[in-house]
Length: 531
Image 1 (cartoon, rainbow, N blue to C red):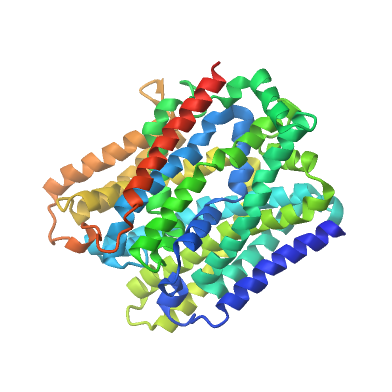
Image 2: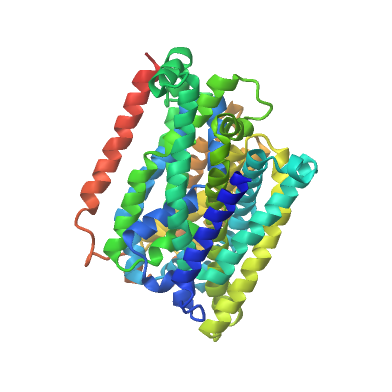
């Protein structure tokens, strides 16, 4: 009973505070609804970035990977910190210069309206097939295990997954569709505090359990018994070979943190260039702590349960159930629920933004008013949510949801990133070359990785290397095709030049510090794991 009370109390607190903070907000106009009226400060942006990114697909999926493959999977977190530095220093000043609301809007200025529409559709397809269902499914697993939903409701595992997917989807949809970006960002920040406490609590209690009451003894047990699990340097043939950090790994992270609408939209709502950069770099420092609660619990679970779990994605839920005192189950459940909602409603809100601004106003009805655009965007968000809720339960048929999610993402992410990067670097790439290269790039990755099984000319190549090679091919193809189909218009200079006035003076120094810390973390754990 106490667990249920604490769950309802914390969840209700977030909802009430978000409502009180946003009840007088103007949701009838696009800038207020889609960009929070440019009122977001650095700390709010940092909290929203972390919570939008951090959800159960990571808590469960990445820890599940760590259970099987060890610390090498922390690359998804640590290299992300580097990508956020790239966002703060390179991408964001250019976005801010153009005062854009969506990434496809940037592409319209650089290329043309049709490019904007194409990328808007591709972005939305990626969100509804790759991100939303994974958030819902992993969230359902976490809540089912934590609260024993099948036993509580007297239903089977499959039925309980369907029930929780729809419960989470409906709750998240209410936040995203009816609250706007500011409500999403405020709820993210509150949930962030809870997740910081709850997320750090699980590995600490896991170490205490391993060490019979001592954290240091628990850590010593891991170092003594399974030191290889702590080595982040993956070898060829393993899940994340070290060489892939410099090819597909860095590219997918740069796409996610620099061009993914559901992430960068938080920065578009900043009060100023300085606040935007501050928020991104604060989040990059916080990201460096990610392996502690997104990788270490999986390693602890391996030490605790051995290689005996039926599915690796059950490692984190089983660890939580084993080490968390009953009195804290409700609070942690509320924290997990908040993390699920944060990612789901943020992605859903970005879908509404993309459709409202890029598709409806950009293609269907250019003369539509702000009020009409917002209304249509909300309706589309509801449709996207329903589709995602219908797809999510079927993910359970796959083994290793985190790897599956990333491989699906690479189909569209790397080609989109190539178009944006080349669009920023040079004016010589033509519109027609960019469009052709986008579809060639998506088709090539599907062919090489999904159809041919990562085997090229009889040689098996890691899918991250294929993603990296695909990026290079797309960029070269754009340059070649631009000679055949030269550009018929000059790109707006505003999209190629960064905004410098009002930049945060500490940005470059802090960015360099983050890069150094990435190197030091890898060095420390490699020495520990190989000793």
